[in-house]
Length: 246
Image (cartoon, rainbow, N blue to C red):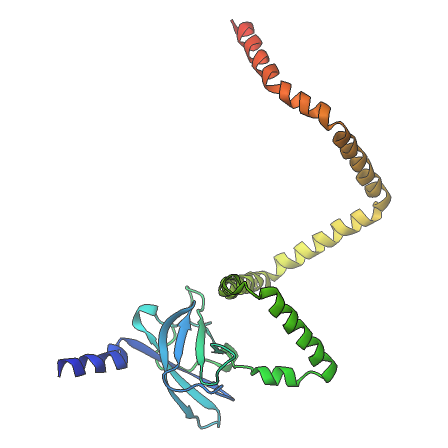
């Protein structure tokens, strides 16, 4: 009986979870029990998939207590664990800002915060035959490039999502400070215009710099000898300054 109670506690999460919901036009073949992940870590599971009154799919999911409450600005994406199966979907959470207010338990996230799953055949079907043939060539080329480098490719893919999230955060910060971004673009335009108006002088300066660097490269033996003598010269200078101080 104790074992049965423990199993029941594990199945329901011990009551230490928070439930939320999303509504999508297509549940993307999500089923009860599919995982919920945050930063690559499993933090919950899908508890129910049902038809809402607006004829959209309502997905109810639970998040573990130790993952903390979801905050306003949280985004949810329906993703596939791989391309080789059908019933291998999961929910990927992108947390909202830490300072944002917590979402009440049981709340439904807005449609703008949900990214539905786009099936591969839908993407390929949108291309014409010529584009599909080119895409087939790209896939074959990539396959040849990563052949025998599966471990490195997996490591790169693992770090790709955090990198894209960081780029997205940077873009959001830039968009939030619109006035500063406008001043930066205007200043950059003035700098480029100033350089363009002095193109001949800039070309001459670049040419003279190239000539000077070429001369230095031609005297590399002399330069090497000078650098070899520099420590002795510096030591002699230090000794002379010490005598001068006395």
